Image (cartoon, rainbow, N blue to C red; front, side):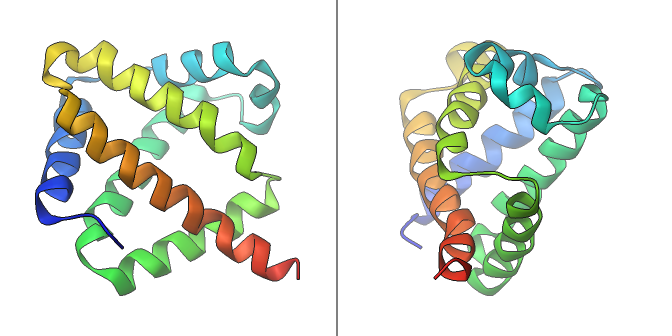
Length: 140
C-alpha cells in the first residue's frame, strides 16, 4: 500500500466529517450514482437509505484499516467476495468513485480540498484494484 500517513489521516478525517454532516438516511450518494450510471440501480436493494448507511459504515471500516495491512487485506477480501457474487465488475468502480467524490464536494463544500480529494483518489484506486484482484485470480 502506498498511502502515506498524512493521506490516511486526511481520508479518515474527511470521512468522519462527511458522516457527521450527512443526515441519517441520506441518499444523495446513490442518487448521484444512478444519475451517472442508471444501469447500476438494479444491483442494489430497494432500501437505498439503509444501503447508504451500510456503505458509509463499510467505508469507515476500510479507511480505518488503511493503517493495518493485514486487516485491510482481510476486509477487502471479504468485500470482494460479496461484490463478485453480486456481479460487480471493474467498470463499476469509476461511476462509484465519481458519485463518492461528488457527494464529498456537495456535503463538505470547500472543506473537500484538493489535497483531500487527491488522497481519496489514490486510496480509491488502491481499494478498487484490491477489490478486483481476488475476482481476477479466481477466474484464472
